[in-house]
Image (cartoon, rainbow, N blue to C red; front, side, top):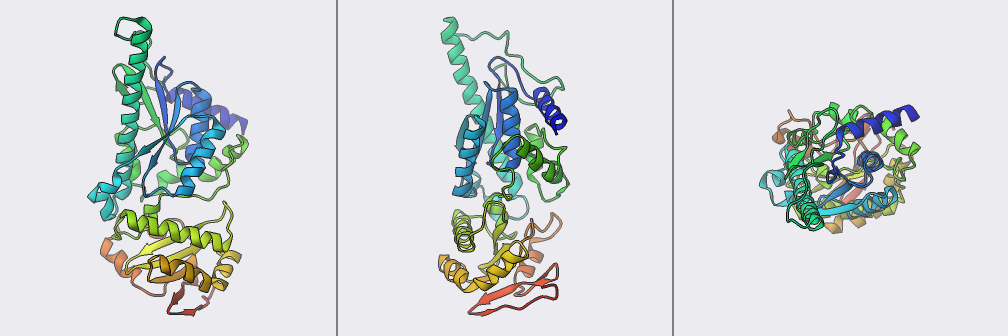
Length: 347
């Protein structure tokens, strides 16, 4: 494990900038991937590292609280920036490219942070030398491998993200294209999610075993518009269900917003699913008043409504209109009007 950590730290050093007034900015969410990157970047560049979290309706309040807590634990400065994807019609349409549009807005916002930091840095330098112009002798930053970055006024800024090896295999992660467009460095992209968790645990990160918590937009079936109202509805429904089931941080729970104003509650198979079935009347009484018209329950599956890039929106809408589906041998448990708990063959 120590060899892996040394390799990662060396890689971050090669990717980042050690320029006197350089900046190493981490696209931060409080998840284990970006937290590991933040810890590595802060260790390599303690004076020039900065974490930035994009704040919008797609970020659950609990996730923002976690991001603040983890950043404080690492010791890296955290900047909260408002992102504007919620005003982008292409993002709102949610037709398969929303992640790309969201990441484009995020990295644009991070660039703005970098530019502002550069302006402030030059002002400080000018005040120090007293001639109105900063010294440029130490401004040529850059890693040994020639990694990309933002050059602003002669000052190099490197953006980092937490993309891992598993992410690169997932064809639905179109946000990776935006990262490539902005030359974002991905220092842990040779590690699987399991390996990321192992390293994070070794480094003492408090969220090493937290369940993944992607943005709220990922809960929406393609074609369900990603409006602030819909995202807030999903967040409230998840909060209500998680509290009722008394789930810990390592347990998965999603409320998928489907066409026809249907909600699919997904929880880990096994005892938690059984508890959700036993408590379905209570869960229904909590979720339906929030604004959903129906509530179904099924086992959790990561990316269950992502559909893949080749699945037309029309096909996904048709699928979401099916009242009862089968997922890995376990039927959906439908709750609408009255409770009906049908057991699948694998239950």
